[in-house]
Image 1 (cartoon, rainbow over the protein chains, first blue to last red):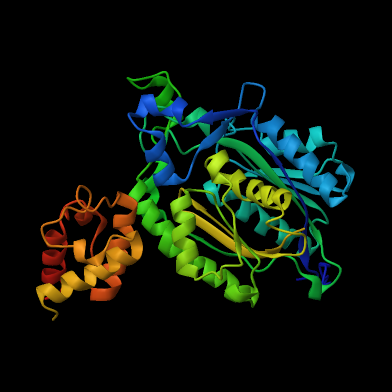
Image 2 (image 1 turned 60 degrees about the horizontal axis):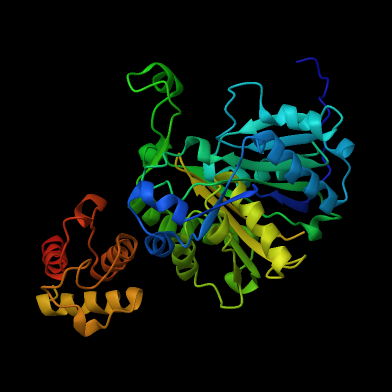
Length: 339
Length: 81
């Protein structure tokens, strides 16, 4: 060793969410349009999932187009200019290119100054994974402003005749801008509690890989997502309530301090069961965006926050618990201040 | 170990709490789906609560075999003995 010291940034910083924005596809699909192909009924779908209608994207509403719309809204909400963005993180499982990343294209089209850009594959936990990365970057000084986008076109990978998923999956984009807090006492993003459980890889997954989808006996066709509803319901409702509780503890708060609870919008029944497990006080507003949006995987949490701000259920400065969970299985939860 | 009747009563309490079905309707011969109108997701909640209450493990693959209240009571009796 030659005695030269590599310089590192030692300044302690806190991060916070500066702005939120979403994009909902123009087409609203009612249960009536879904039921014939899955031998079901409007009432069955409502009672099993709380979904009345969902948004499906049209051909123009691509992963990149929806992301750009959501990110521009989030930047405007944050009062941050595109050229101030140092990194763009896109969480998605439905950008149908192995490479290049959606993030690189989005960073360019947003007008950033060659911001770092990459995609994250963490399914329905994608937004919380991206938010955790962004927060750590800001805290470490790697980036000053980070755009985190959760975006999906799940309808592309949905088997419209599959009774357990056809009514559930939907499309959309949500974005957040993460930046520095004024000081450590103003921290707006708590420690992440996250992990994976690959033992249960089979519970939610893409049924066939691209090679089989294209060249297998049944092909060529799009691959489809499949899910085992009851074990997923059990895992999400009970195991994820424990993770949510750990996220509260990690941030040094209790359910009594919370104003808002925004779980991934997987299924209204999961949201209800988690809320009961957490013993949320009645005054805590619970996100129920799934009713008219469907399950949009990585996009669901920022979309739900945006709606709660629009309806007045959430206000700037509110303390929120967010948690994402999905295929992998993977999960991540944290406490944030609503921007 | 609790008696059959005690397990049925405990299960009836759980079913009532989760689904609102009157506890007195939860009798051994009743089918969870057809008679008590309990859907598969509520059944998962009933199972998890029963596991906690009776200190037993009811695996996912076993749940579909528990068609009636009697089936569940018998399973809990065996699992707990």
